[in-house]
Each structure stands twice: as C-alpha cells, then as structure tokens.
Image (cartoon, rainbow, N blue to C red; front, side, top):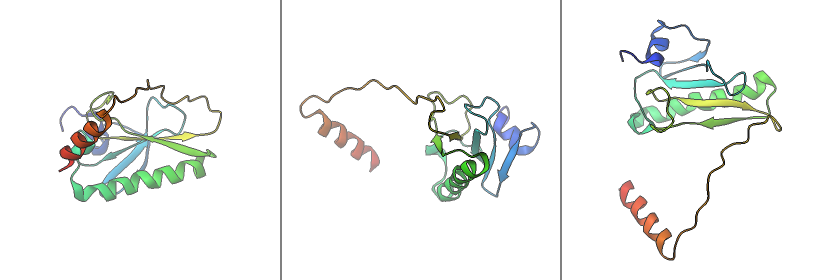
Length: 136
C-alpha cells in the first residue's frame, strides 16, 4: 500500500532490522522500543486491523508471533514477553502489527492502569447478550 511504512519495510524500500520473515509475516525491531529487543510482527499483506486479516492467515500469522515470543527470552535473557496489539485506537501505523516486548521482573514497566467500573443490576447480562449477538 502506497504510503504505508510497514509495506515499505516489507518491500525492502525502507531499512529495518529484520529478525524473521516467512511467506506470511515479517518481524523487525521497533525503532522506538519499550525495551531493547522490542519486535513488531506484521503480515506481508496490507491489512489495517486484526479483523481485516483473512481467517486462513490467522494461524500462520500468530505462529510467527509465537515464534518471536519464544525466541526473545532465549536470545536476550528475558524472563518472558509482553504481546500486544492495537486496533485503530493507539495504532500508530495503519497496518496490523503485534508488539512482542522482552520482559524481566522489575523492569519498570507498570502495565496499564485501567479505571475499573461495576455493572448495575442486570447490566452484565445485557452486555454479554449484545456481544454474543455481534458474534453471530
């Protein structure tokens, strides 16, 4: 897609520190890492959100994400990884990408501080019904 920096990286027109590539996905270092070794995994085909990814590409795409999430601790001495993805909101590049960030206990990443709320009586069932209806 013209103007997409990730498509430009995939095409080889924009340099990147590529760590893996197969017939469905590419993984490269994030230029603004949360921690050193922070990798972005992107599908080779231009899709904007996870919902746009064709169903037949889900397994190969997430297999690539899984391989990176296993490799980072081994490669970097991390204790684990944080795997995250934004869809539209907070998605800085409009091309599906999954962040795989090396994590170590005490690394200073505090995670998300989400406000918590409570459902009113009967409201939880209403929300569950609405979500279930959207899935059909």
